[in-house]
Length: 335
Image 1: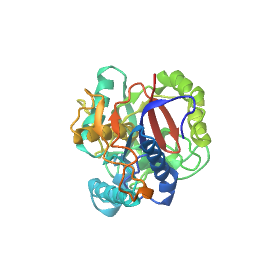
Image 2: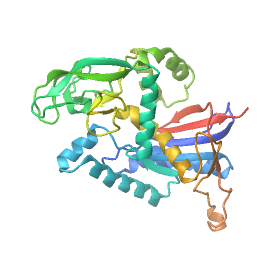
Image 3: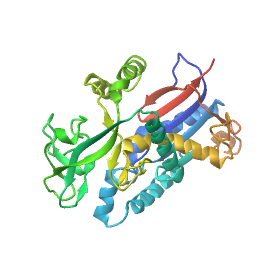
Image 4: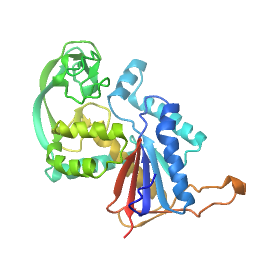
């Protein structure tokens, strides 16, 4: 799908990062990965400059919950499913230029650098607040370890960050009768410090950019984002009391990691950096990222002649961005 009103000089196409606590299934493939691969192959056949980036999302509470249930470490879980997912894509011929992971050293360094930059620029709000604590497990609980009744639809198994029945976003304090998903214990409150991104300060810009600028988004995606904006954005914590994830790179943050919804989207950038490093280029200093690893081979030519030579990857500056069913597409508009 191309925007008929704009001509792009180059493209970076990314797909939603599959969560590494299970294999991909036909719904994932049909909804996101095969359409994205089809689009990328189309662009390559036209001779367009395109980079196709993917990777596994490997942090967050569901990983630690699965590890506890299986009696192994979170790293064991993500190693297993990252390899299964990557192997599935390779066997299906999904033509990523790079498929990496958020537990990589490059990603940890990149995500930490994002946080540190925002921290040093004074963009965060630091708050010490009372958070839910499991007295039986002697640990603070992240949102997904807290379950209770949704105040909007009555679902009695809503999580502390979202009700997956009605889609409402919420905080653990909004749940009715919150209790521990680990032990079932009633929770107590204890003081802990976290860093919040004041989303309300960016609400007007986001409203203009999304509501006015991207009406082509799928109706369910557009409607969900519009409902968040209509309800008013609030400061959102970007750190968690957890021992699995990207450690918060500041003092007085022992035992805290970056919230997975802060760190995971940075994976598109860290994977691109990794791709550049593998091709012997510095993504910060050059505009030519070197050749892609994939070429499109035409079946009517016996699969032996490329439609186009290796496509050069050029840094996207001032990108236009649109979303198509879990596929994120960036394109630098031609002058």
